[in-house]
Structures are given as C-alpha cells and as structure tokens.
Image (tube, rainbow, N blue to C red; front, side, top):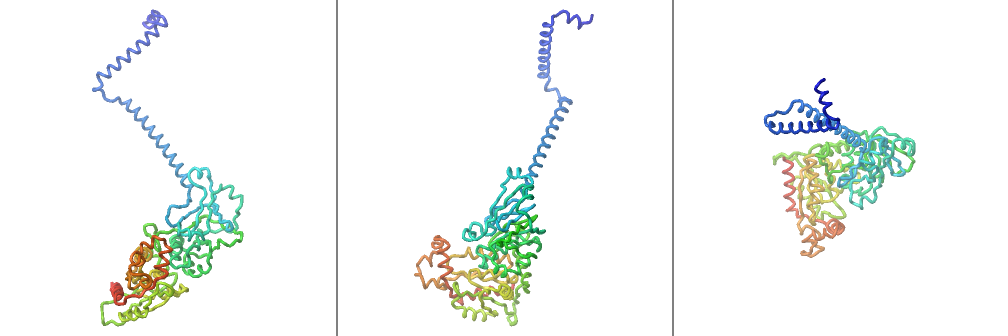
Length: 470
C-alpha cells in the first residue's frame, strides 16, 4: 500500500480538506517569508519578465490599433465635413464646395450632395448663409448684396429630386456680388477686383464667374481684367430663366487680405504680381519708371508728372501755380480728372513717372503706374494720416512704388475760412471723428478744398526727383 493510500485512509474526507487548506496556507507563509528575506539577492525572473513584456506589448499594440482606428474615423469625418465655409475672416466669408453642387438661380440656394449626412450632423453644420462681397460687417454696403444659402442634402435624395441639372459646367465656379459700394474706384479694386484675382488666378482662366446684383456697366468698365481672369461668359445670378447650374467645385465669396493690398504670407501672389497682371490685361507698355541721371546738362530727361484733378471737393484752388512751379523744376506736367473710360486712363497713368493727388478714390489709379514711379498723396486737414497710409501708402510700397506724403497746414485749407482758428474742427479733428464717419466726412472730405503753398510743396517735388534717381 502506497504512502498516499495510507494517508488517505487515516483521515476523513473533511479532515483531508482541512489539512490541505492548512498546508496551502503554510506554503504561502513560507514563500512570502523566503521572498522577504532574500529579495535583495533575487534578480527578476526571466519568465516573469517575458510574460510581463509580452502582456505590455500586447496592450500597446491594442492601444495603437484603437488609436489608429479612431484616427481613421476622424480622417473620414474630416473628409466628409469638407467643404466648409470659413466665417472667421474679418472682411469676407468664403465657402469652398466639392462634389455634386447645384445652384438654383431663382432661389439663391446652393445644394451640395453628401454621402454621410449622419457624420456631418455630428461634426459640423450642414447649412450656411453668406453674402459674397468682401466688406463684411458694413451693413450699409452689405444691405444690397444677395444672401446665398448653402444647403447639404443626402446624395441619394438630391440625385432623384429637384433641382435637376440643366446646365453642367466642367470648370470651377466662383460666385460673387457687384453690389455694395462698387462705382467708387477704390471699392472696385479693394472689395472685388483684388479679391477676385486672389480667388481666381490659380485657375489660369479656366473658371466660371457667377455674378449676383449684376451691374452691366461695371462689368464693361472692368472687362479687360475680368476677361483675363476668366475665359467664359459671366453668368447673371439675377436672371430668372429657370436654370440650374451644376458644378463639381464651387467657391462662394472672395478671399480678402487688406485694403487695396495682398498679404503674400497668406497667398502665393503679391500686389507686385497683381499690378503686373493688370498691366498685361490693359496692354500697358511701361514696366518701370524713368531713371534720372545726375547730369544737369541732360535736358532730355524730363519725368512726367500727372496731377489728378478734382472738380467738386478737395480741389486744388491754385492748380495753375502748382503746374508752373512743377514745370520750372523740369517736369512734363499733365492735369486731368479721372476718366470714366478706365482703359484709356490706365494708358495715361502708365505713361507717367510721378502721380499726385488729394486723398480720395482717385489715388487708386496708382495701380497702373510703372514700377519705381513716385506717388505723392496730399493729406487734407483732418488727422487722416492713418487712413491715408493704410489705404494708399502701404499698398503703394507693396506695388514697388515710391511713396511720399504732403500734409497741408491750416493756412492751406479752405476750412480756415469757414471756422475760427481755435475751433475744434481746426484744432481737434479727433473730436469730430468721435461723432461718427458721417460728421467727419461731411466736413473734411466734402467741404474742404486746398490751396498749396507752392514754395513749401516744391521740396516734395524735388524729393520725388531724387527718388527717380535711385
């Protein structure tokens, strides 16, 4: 009889269980005691380490797989929420749409098909309303600009229901408005033409323009530039002909950086490139202004000076004296008011080396000057240095023009004849500006003319000549 058999028969089944439990507990006590005593001398067990490392590795692998899966879901969602509308810019809202896009002309609604509306509802809005004109925040300007609603629909429902496509385009479309302040040359360029160049130039003419609040005369006036940007006839968004235009890519709204300017850090383009494109559009011959030599005997080097005249407000009251003094300094002088025929006036501006005028929309014609030409901006009374430099001074430098300012004194302003010398209109223009733009404009822009001190202004023209020598 074996030892195990004797052991089993010597104890009842209950006693065997008690003895087994006691033995197990005793073994645990001995094991813990052994580990406590010899722990400093024991190295980690290889098998245990292997198991732990395998377990941790498996955990890392599973975690990585989970992260990868989550990232794929995020990537899918991010693809689905594109295109989106960027409403964060200060001056313009822009929507870039890709997919099955349908524009119902007579309802000002743009439909975009989406394959996964459930994801879109979780991650983004599925409709936007914007006005495609780059003067956001100016309610006076935006009041005359059509609102467009961009609405995302299930792909299967949009393909089976209205609106049904009846005009399909194979190029990108761009929707913008010719409402707002257009008709003022500064706003023509700052609000639409430069933003349109920023938005459309990358397509090299292969782009379809769709215009809301259409002004036919405005499109004709700027036809040379518009036709250079797009090879297609412009679609009138106000014409209720029942058309449903369909695109695979559509941009609603125009990109805008700064007043009459481009920020090259936000775009592959610059104002220098824009003016080069403009010269090409209008077939302007001169790329650079005259370079004067320091030779008093060279009488053939006569730079051309253009004086942009004004007839209703901010006029030069002694224009004749300014012309005589300029000629004595060696300038070939032309005096003219901005022409409604923009192409013809662009040719005149481009033929000149120096352009001068009073702060106002007429100064926008500087875009046609050749590079290295000099722009002289005459600042009326009113503390408008910031306006002058922001609207024209900084853009002029970005066009590679030389820029000078001439600030009139109190004696050179007609306001001195309308108000006492100690009046706040003369001494504290900031107080007037606090009353609002309407009050400021009515006094300093609409009721002020200038009589330049020609002896004082002479120094500015001499500085212009020096700049043409550089």
